[in-house]
Length: 233
Ligand code: SF4
Image 1 (tube, rainbow, N blue to C red):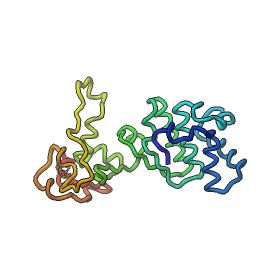
Image 2: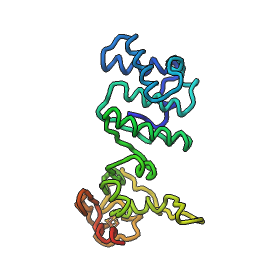
Image 3: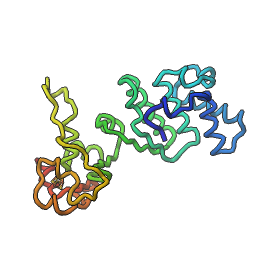
Image 4: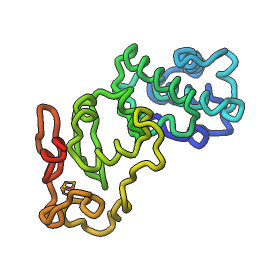
């Protein structure tokens, strides 16, 4: 797993190499010297310059982007079948973000590891994902392949997310449309559709009955009573 904040995910009192090697030793029972060699190899794989020196750096001796690359190296060190990347680029500036996203996609193709991105950034979704699951209040509200999702979003929450992204094709915008209200508290049971208090097209049934996730196209499903109308809008 790659966590979102590389500064708090790395232990400040151990070198980066030792932390990567620790994962290798625990999972593969390799000796310390073999694990350290693997750590250096992993830093090279994620394209950190001068890996022979960097392997002995402490986290504070690296930039934020480099620390995140080290986290990716650590996550991939034991050749996982699935890599979970939880907002892996939010703490980084946009240039480093683009570099890290390209690297993750490239490594996915080279190593055969499947990648699950957890993100609020629809730009990241559009650029890196094939299949998308949109969640709201802890439940799946829509799932589709990335082309269908962006071409014909079937849930008002997905549409709201898309409208609230700046689009240069729309020219100068004074204010981005927002989704009014806040996410409901999950401490209380939710009756009906959890998005109803914020939904611009809610009707009576939405407040009484929870819509189940159902097919609205081939490989496209949504949990909305009005999904077909929403898609056609
Ligand atoms: S079920 Fe109703 S309230 Fe929920 S998203 Fe669909 S239209 Fe809106």
